[in-house]
Image: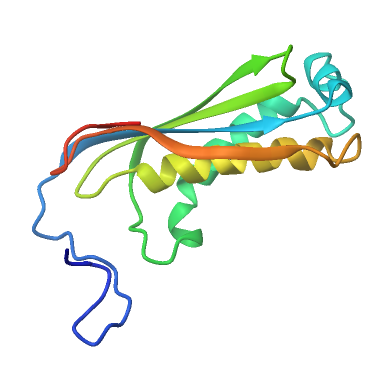
Length: 156
């Protein structure tokens, strides 16, 4: 297997995608944050002192997709055509699952953007709720599906 992120001398390099065709590319990532019953109640009742947690986390996740190449050294800057963050709330389990979908028409995929968006939204939930309880656990951040490009469709 050839690793394309290294040159002949073993130095890390950004992959040259100039010869690739532009195609529609979409990726969705997810992750979960486990919270206490007190944190869940505060989020759902919109009583967290820092504001509406899910609205702020949604905005932060979208911003995270757009800042991905600033955080991941060999990641190409992409012109995203869409970024969306949604939540699945499991009140019984006191868990919030974040889903982030990113799309582009380009020469390289948007998996890193979707993953960064999901992680940023989760970290924002943590940040906004840590004054209530610092024992929150972020877990299971992973790629769910990606479509487009040479490698085709991936489904977790």
